[in-house]
Length: 198
Image 1: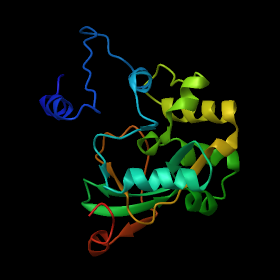
Image 2 (image 1 turned 30 degrees about the vertical axis):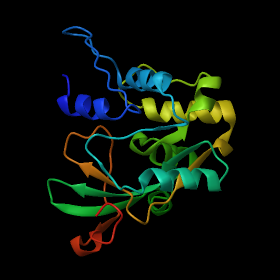
Image 3 (image 1 turned 180 degrees about the horizontal axis):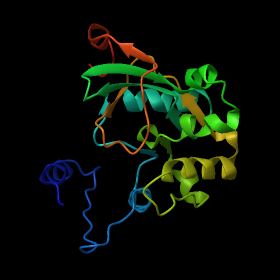
């Protein structure tokens, strides 16, 4: 379905490209394929993934890019995030490293919790093009397979985690999320006003 809003925004800013694909009544491009198309038509230096039902602070991109550069990496993602649960009307906080510690997880078991949430992927474009690192043509787990391909091609040092204690993202839980997320801590509503997303 076409989006009048995105078409209007793209018409006002030549840095933005809005594409709509019609594949047929029963065929639809996978999330991985859509991300590959976006990556291959991009003209900037970075690729940032966004989830259409999450809230990103104005400082999100600069914070993530700074974190990536401070650690001399090419790829950054969040290891913690705030979220809002629509059903309960409550805010929460999830910390993947703390979750692994509490659950006494082995390193291989925590991998998906740390690296498998594509809503906060940000990376340099050129290494992906140079190394021909693409998303697999699928709708689920395309993000974790993509970051594993980065690590396999460039080494673990190319990826870093950013701990978000400032609230640069609010992940929305709406009951139809494809990935699992839950609160380790509830965040009182009055504390949310101090977050970057507010």
